[in-house]
Length: 569
Image (tube, rainbow, N blue to C red; front, side, top):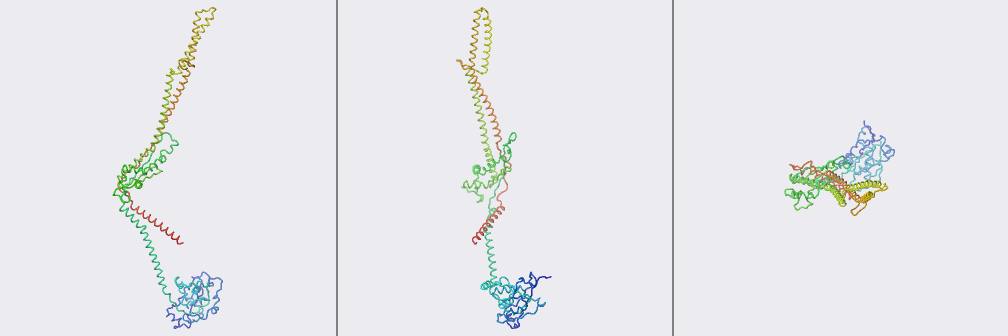
């Protein structure tokens, strides 16, 4: 059920004088003016049937049927000078409700159209009459382009004209107005619109062709040339892959703080990076060229011009080619060195790979050789010095023994002490005997004098022996001095013996440490000659070239667009 509010409908009727021969009747039809089109269908309004959408604002035509004759002019001039009769319409009937009468919205649009054309009207109906007098049907559905005034003056006048609110009338019947002769459409309007559309189509076609031309020049053509090179011109190259690892000798004895990472990839990481740097250096390239003719191999005429090396090329050019064809990578998590050698012949590629592995082994040996030699040299020199000083100390002891004619000061002191003890014992016995003889009242002088002389001799001998122990004599130095010098010399000998033992221990420890510092290069994957070409990868390289050229074109076009906008701004 349609619940939309309706507004009062009106209809236009012809004037009484506009009959079959009048200008507003058949004459208008003969003049080419179309009859008044039927009104559009009822427009649904979002407010009540008694409301016109403008709230409580009063309008001149909202006073009811009695106000219409006072506001409407007696007659409106037409294009032919005939004043159509304005008569009130008959009351609305069911049949009239179904007739195509204009709605309030159409009347407001007609009022606005009249203002746009510079027509002054006090009511909506007067605006409709004056528009038809000029040959404009305000109720005809037109496109947006047809609503635009063809004359700039009319548009300016419409802009400068004061804007008045449209008038609405709910219940007043619309008087019959004779149709005005229709004004023919402006000449060339359709052709102008068609020309504009054609121009837009031509511009789009031209821009599309320019875009395709730019894509063809900057993207498709370079990609086609790259694909032709990779598929038809490029020389097939063979790659030999190998993997090797640098290992360290296992430490002997229990684990220590310095050997926490021994046996792992971290222990030889520095050596592996050094080997990688050497194999990727100019020294390795020059050595490979001197041993196996690296430059001569890539200067062969069978190689395509892009990859071929000029026979008179410098070492820098050869080194750039060497960097492209000898690829070395290091995996720090596993400690593995991966090497790929590319050449135009599989056998030559294998030869280059084996030669580079040999160079790497020499580098590994040189890395620890100096360290091992330094460690062993220091320990050996310390041992030799301790041994020489021991020999010198022993020679000093011998010289003292020969000089003093004494093998051992302790033995000499013991002998002298024993002699003194014996003489003192004998002296004591002789003194006892002498005292017994002198104890007689009349001792025999013949018997006491020899005993007295013997006692004196024993005392002198004991004094001489004691003098030899502590005093120098014409025969030589005292035993005490000889014993002191011999003790010092013997102590020096003992010290040198201890130092020699420590130097020997250091030498042995250095030898063990040097054994732990040894590095070994172990091959995990040996170089094997391939039986099929590895490069070029034609499809992948062509696709990559397409992406690169497309990206470059996109970046340039975006940059140009941004610069153009900045300049235009």
